[in-house]
Amino acid sequence: MDNNIKQRIDEITNEISKLTDLNIKHASLTYMEQQAAFLLWQMADEKHIDNDSFNV
Image (cartoon, rainbow, N blue to C red; front, side):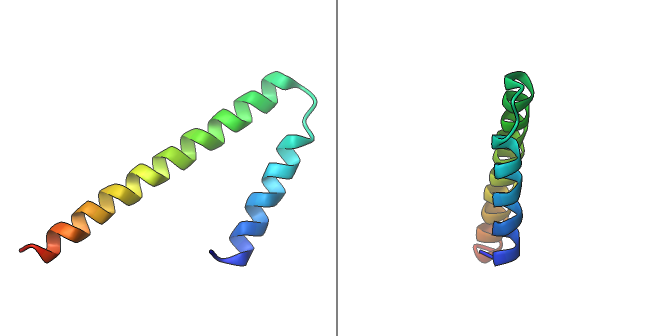
């Protein structure tokens, strides 16, 4: 993993952990979870397309 990306993720995680409003903290973490799930789904879809291109 690119170290700059890891650092940015860690910074965002630390920023969210400092939030005192639990509703905002929960909403922020839920949003991060949704974005990560979407990226994982997108990556899996790209992998399927890539694998299918080898089978042609």
